[in-house]
Length: 197
Length: 227
Image (cartoon, rainbow over all chains, first blue to last red):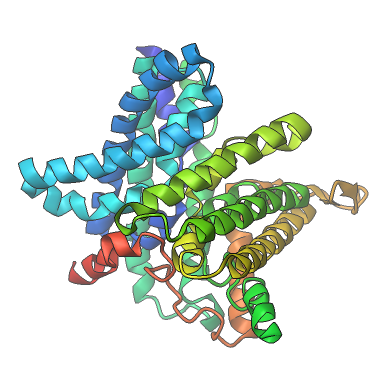
């Protein structure tokens, strides 16, 4: 239990996917202009991350490893994620249309989101057990959601500002904001050891 | 004719530089550029994959059915990424260690899928090869530059050679995540300033150049406007 809390704390705050590992930058910059869409994207990513881990972890440990074809990992994982996303999209559309309306539009964008592929590979590389892997993915997703929501809030304020120098308008000032946000997240480093160590 | 070919090659380096103008592939751009050599190593790996996948897709463009083309492209790209991954593990284990997770992540680099969708699937093999090479060189140069700047400020070295010689303490924050965002911001602002805002016409990262545009039909942008 303690281990699972440690994994989640570390992946949400210390090793935040977006702010310290630069994973999932495209949606972070592209879909964080409004709070609603940032929340939707964050939830959809969390959902797909957990689901892909549930699918890829057993495949790595019960199929690729026993057959000695671990080098097929990249190819197999990306195909699983891509087909899973399609499947989820179709299933949501048919059975839970209300959820589809709020999350569905973000699903096609998630296939090429590197954060999802990264978390599945990381779970294998770090030698997590199935349960730890699932919680690690959930934590990664929540960390992504947290970063998205915080950043969307900042950007909405930023849009109202007229003080930005012309060359910095648009993307550069957004990146500077991300830089400062990431700087403040660095304050969390050591928190896991501090509490549990 | 010749001039045309040259422009296919050079547009990826300056006018349509994938990182600094089109703002694609930001994850590896920021993550691995803690030193110039890492940046160049990543750039060359991506160039190799881009060149091979562009050529393979240009060869297969009449065979791949339109409806399932994106999964087909992903399989082709993932195949080449695995080749690069194994080659790096065998011959450059140190680089492999420092790039780590970001090598398999080349598969989901928007630049590669984007070029497959927008260029290689419509053009001849030779043109696609030139396009892949140009885009790859542009990507490598951008990553090398960012890496060099971060390495110089962050550890006082360039390509591993000591430059400041203890004259001042290097600012290690440049090697960490905030420094990556900051350096990229300043570089893009400089380009904006030098080109008087013309270089990056669409200043926000939007559906321009997004490889999934056909799948989603620009819905993320529309959705933003609606909300």
